Image (cartoon, rainbow, N blue to C red; front, side):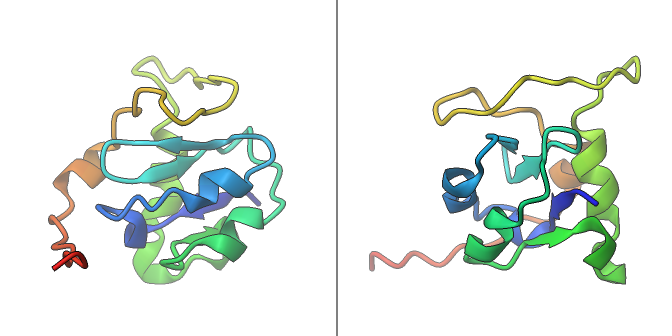
Length: 115
């Protein structure tokens, strides 16, 4: 069962999860990160390091977040239904387009901790 990133990541995008992934299957989107459903080897390293507790195994995602199982999967398919397999994400890569549902998700107000 692949890991998925839930709504707690939206507008936070800490990115520490990407540093622990041994196969670079966590991709940066415009408002959140996504885990590639085929590239993920289900090691759980990202889940253990996520500072906002946004990462879960797909079969452990609660009812309120079930849409994110589909969202993490669907964001990697093109308009023709073909799975895109980019082969790994690297810091500095252009963000992938967010899933339509993430675009529509209400903006989260992030507290400025520099003040």
